[in-house]
Image (cartoon, rainbow, N blue to C red; front, side, top):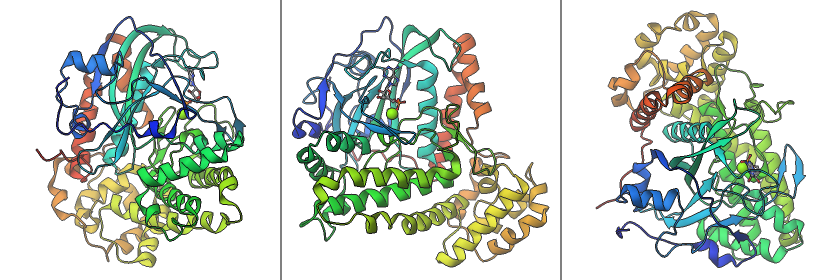
Length: 481
Ligand code: AMP
Ligand code: MG
């Protein structure tokens, strides 16, 4: 492998010792057909120059990267799943493959897998990922990135030539192995596991590790010197509140907000039964197995706060008498502020102060709820505010804007200026419909892949999402040469 100056290996997980993970052997697959290579992010981490054979050796056969983890590590964690504690978890079909630095901002990033074989935590599962599961994770991560949600990136997907049996897909179904690039895989459940085992020494070590490598704001926190777990928790609460706010403005329903699917870096990851919101409906649920709607669209902020309370409990052994409750109470104000900010960002208007901005959001919600206008259309049609009025009135859903429930919104918008007027001329803004990913489209992208191995719709969608993200200022910058 040619050594690129932007490739900066830094396997920091090894500094935690050998009680936080288990070395594992990757599966060997009958076939390796490359289906997705994230060249933009490969360049960001100094892996953009890998040729096809090198990419396959790394991301299908998992030969170690230079000066990186000598063996893949199945990470140890537990978690609350649908509010029930499950001590049988851990990486059951994935592992940490490598850690390296982002060449632009210096953050430590993980390359980790899904579908790379069984581990001590597979619990009778096959350790595999369906091809459709891989395709769905790529699509979700790409649109979230384009909408400015902090998210892991899909990095590589190989189809692997096996037949899998699944209850939720017509089976047998095709197999794949996914590699994702993420800002740590330190889950809330990682802390829960060691706390449950009474290993508060390890919990303390994980807290120090997270602060040192992932949470610069916690380093600057006044509690950092005397009570690191408080500084840690405050940072995680703040980041998680902002993440939840961004999901909500993006119309994203994660689907499985278990504590093993939440990272302390406030980055979103692990996209299984996700959906984007078609119309305003707080009860809209993504996972077919979420019978109670516990993780429905409108319940996500609450679910995140519930998870943070479980993280705080896991810290009890290192917090001593220091109270966690006041920090958990910081969630709501941070969330409210971040939600309004993210909403205005999606509308492309410049903020005017919290009170006014909140009124604009409320007027938008009235319009969305009462007219059942397609969610993404609102932001697309009115991007930049009244500067887009003529376009909104020519929209295929313009009838909603003539409704009396649109009046408070249109009135409120009068006071607002476009935050990025130059974007209005772009082709993606002039298009009649927004760049969306509703379930029917996801299925329509998958169908030709399943029927005749036709990837053209998938590739066109990635290109469309990226063009939209670039206009929104959410494309990754290339490292300086
Ligand atoms: P997930 O639904 O991917 O967040 O996974 C929840 C837990 O189930 C984790 O411990 C996974 O590693 C494990 N798991 C999910 N699917 C499989 C599978 N096909 N084989 C083995 N373990 C799995
Ligand atoms: Mg998971």
